[in-house]
Image 1: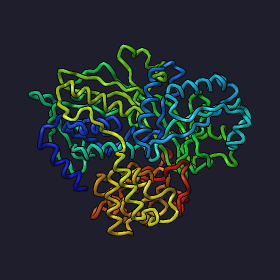
Image 2: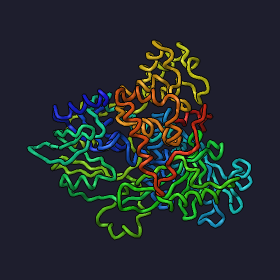
Image 3: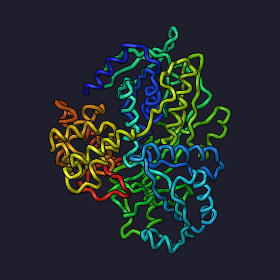
Image 4: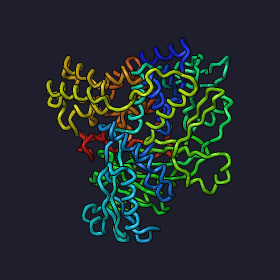
Length: 569
């Protein structure tokens, strides 16, 4: 158990907080960072790990919603484009531009000229912030991306959006870490059992899943940021809301890298929806599906797998078609789509037209806020809007208006100055896909200065610890102290994406993994190691056989990523 987590759990019942936030996905994390950064006293809890549900299952893309142009949702597209640009401007190490290379079938419902015009309009909606779109002929597609099957293509077009240089859960944790730095009291694996309004305060009974102990958190405002579970918890706290959720399931399959392309290859699947091949360092992420679901959590089915594999085998010219045996890992996320009760008649027939916009609903009498829907692209707007609502509820934010987000430029300059003076990049292990200084800043920003000090005291701290990844010894010590790792999955799947690009058996026999566990868990190292791999034995069934270990092993060194920043775990 980490000392930071233990200390924070003790603090949860020692004071009255201005705001208690339930749920540490992107909405909860960014709200905690925004409020604490402006001076509010904040508690943030999640029944699992941070970003362990919807926020860890995205495509890692930060986009302005080009598909919403077809539904004439120009206001939403403009807002999302501005939000995307805002993230690219303020998180330049983490959110970077990437090209979408789009191929169209001859029978597609629109011509390439029409869609290219839409791409130009999209570029304009984004204030010309990215590289301009370009029209693609069939010959141009064949020349630049020979793996694409153009036998029945009318050509296509290329445009820009953005992607996360690390994974989505890592980006979300950045806001959690910022909230901690601003003084918030944060804990994972702590579940809210119920909440009641008593004498002007919210009393929320919680349970620590690691110890079984219960206690009560008192707060002036209760913020329900439980994502897909928001409706369930509102019932527990007796909140009647105007909005509710419908759920759409999207899956992605991770396979060995199909093409060396540094672009997202975009198509329209045989059901007419957008379909992507997304570079992920030495791997390729393929998807997504869009299926209405009723029950949570969603699961990947053989039908889902076959849909993705059949489409990619039709769209590409591969020497050997992809099969289920090629799947290294899977992502299965639920999209919480917002509907109003008066629109319930559309639930069965028109749910697919619902967008990912967020809605914030406030009960002013009860000092209760619910967040519905949303997506990572719009996260900074969520933080600003929640801050405004909390102020309207009477909570004083002494530093309201101060910038609470973004990479600190002055500290960035200082970090790279110190890194150059000490020759950090020359000290690093050979074969890294990017300079170590860039990697440390991107992942830890201001805290990377502490890592420099660790390396000054002991140069071996700059060496890669886990073979086949780019994780250095100093990073593991830093993560153990400051990132509240409770289970091995927290590190392998969310603080990093090792588990997304490597099969379980390969991870298990990787040189350095046992030492990493000792750093992360101390005396609990063996237990946490065995606990992690036991889950794959339990999933030995037809439904989950693609997740089982296979002959794939970790590469001795990672190949270059598809952009200037590393896309490795």
